[in-house]
Image 1 (cartoon, rainbow, N blue to C red):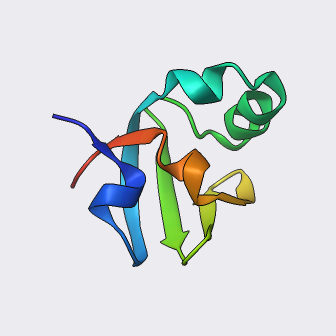
Image 2 (image 1 turned 60 degrees about the vertical axis):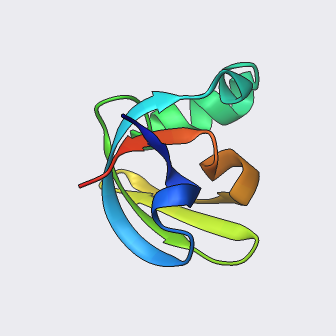
Length: 79
């Protein structure tokens, strides 16, 4: 069973394995390319810092700050 990143870690931070990106993200080709460049894709490991409206996603390739609604469409395997 997969969980949305925002459900598993509603506040704070954690490290996760990405299992799926929601269809909503797949329609935004620019955002999808930015996430892919950082390794935020199925099978990728991310570190996430969740704040009220902003989520910072970190990988070995870099950092991206995005909206919470984006993180709600990153599905992870809780570890």
